[in-house]
Image (tube, rainbow, N blue to C red):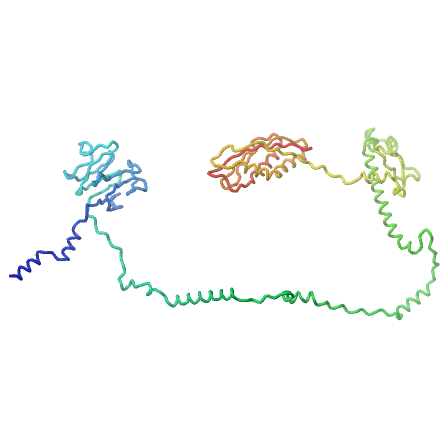
Length: 485
């Protein structure tokens, strides 16, 4: 009997397996919300909201469910948590039904019968843990119900035999090779650091090939054989020929020539004198031409009477400083004195002593072209618009840095038109990268399109680093040009 009672006592108390099964089957905490999305007759998404939180729908990415349909704002709180209860919010454009403790009701009935609270832009109805329903928003259907939260699936793990430890996963052969390589390289570096290398000093630093060039003397060239004084057969034959010829009579050197020594130096002296005379003759001829071209000169006198259609001698007789060559005067040149000429004559032999020739040579120097220079002035300008932020002082600095290139644009056209002057106003835009775009001349009072085009091209090549902040900026600056002389 005692045994029976003991068996009864043990049977009345559940075992450990039974208690574990009861703990699994017993719901832990309140039910959770399960929501499914149906579109075109197919379930496209299903989710269990394990935490009690407000569930929102709409087109924004921050919602729990992203729905693109008509009549739905970017965010709408469909299931709102108030305290520990869920509140269903729905609008006039939503249809469907919901199961409440009082029974299943349509959303239209809840709106018209007063079963739902009017919150202004939408209606509200309180849900319980047994509530379920269907809400249609455009072409999308939402199904919801409250279910017991399913158990959390644990992360999969390998068995203990397969997991092993850290040491078992080491590749000892590869590890030994890495350690050996590291020790070898490390030891070699230490050896290089501590090695006492011998440094050569003095002459030992010079390479051997260079040392040979410095210290070894070059081999002297072979000695040439000295010529002998013994006469050869050819010399004997030449002497015999010269003896057979008559001996010319030798003339004594004159005192004017200065003896043999002076005769040896005469060719060089004569060549220098001839060159000097030719230079003076060229200067004299140039002076004559300049005198003839000047006011009252020979050419002016010849053309003063009209076209040369008469006798040449009669026409030339009208010109001062020009005459018809007669007799020995045909080889003489008239020296120049002033623009009209003096009619004086001089031979080529007297050009060295002529003061007029020296003056003509001085007046006939190199003609230097007058350098055309222009002045440029930068008037006040500045920012005229744009979305960026940029310091106008940097623009003025860049313009003054390239002002010589802009001045060359003006001086190039100033050579063609010495009276060229005026103002060119250039408008341009600086982009964020620092490059210049849209450079154009908004004003040009110089009358030269080439100046304006050259200036705009020069401004268009400007570069700024860094560029404007926040966008591009437009500037306008006027350049005033005027000749310097």
